[in-house]
Figure 1 (tube, one colour):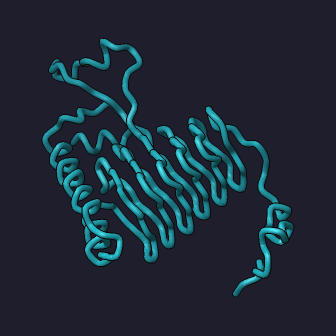
Figure 2 (tube, rainbow, N blue to C red):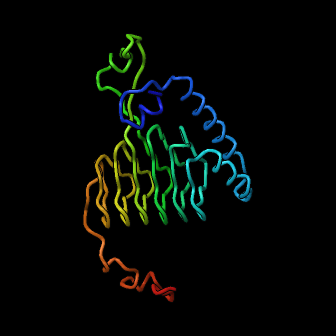
Figure 3 (cartoon, rainbow, N blue to C red):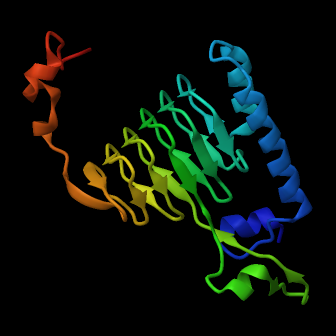
Length: 213
């Protein structure tokens, strides 16, 4: 079994495997290429994202700077906005839905290491070779989510559709759809309801309207 197949299977893999190192080097260089471009160099930026990511949907925008680890393991849906300093350690799969808003300094991590320090330093593979091994769990963010500034999303987490994660949260467990959740660790505070509509905040809505076609 190839090391990338081990990642997908959720079992221990060797991050220094030559095939994995080649993927990461290519992606790390593409990060640099993207980050030196000006914001209005849209075609060049989009071309780099197409080379780096597993998928990116029409109308999505990454402000930059960005840092992807593998890149190809990340899929971003349509019309999703991602603000400054977005970091994705996508050893395992990362899926971000359509119409999401992601604030500045958001970090998504998928890899995990043994808890015991001696096992972090080395384990033996099936042939008795001593290697540094880790494993990874996928992260999924549903459609229509707002992930506020300085949020960290940990391995194995699924965030349901139309959920808001408050600023500074550390998300260690799944969050159900339609929730407002926040904290360290992140916990559901309440369900989002029709009462959260801007039409109930006329002092902020001003002369704008909620209804649209």
